[in-house]
Image (cartoon, rainbow, N blue to C red; front, side):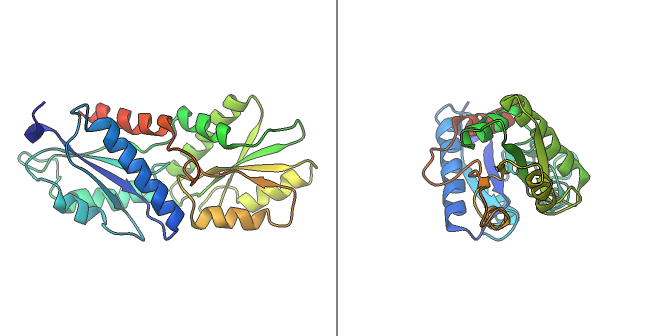
Length: 245
């Protein structure tokens, strides 16, 4: 495929004020570029964000060539407000109306729910005992579709571990994480939180406060300093791009 005909790739994360979170997301974008560009699958790769950081989605789309397709992969774990409202509006504003002659911007599905994410989360957990209670700690959303996707990932993690996994949410309409933790503590044994976040930031800090001054444990998120970018995560992005070609 000639370089001039290759699609551009826009990787769009939520955005975070955490320096560690920013660093690991940038490392993921670099790993994706190193995977896709040498294969001739995409040309330009840009990282943007729906909130907190710059460049935002509009700036990324404005910077990419308008005369070739753009594949936009949300580096988000579930399809909630940012996908159905923020990204949808940004695509329309950029001229991707779906009408003849409109700009070709292809929005892929989110990273989750994908069973490969459960495999990464399982690797993040400490050694478990029979008395441990595993809880998937998800960000949560006002969009029921996003919360349903998190529950599906919780089921995938339970399958991966061969033991029950409850799912709690920091925000949104699902069962609050703090409530789930208190329920599990009443059963005795240790509560082990599996952090269903892409990177460190506000919600990781919030989860840490929930288990502060206890024997409970919080695992790191999918990406964190001191760990290589998981190849499975790069594979998921790779598959999202191929599905859009």
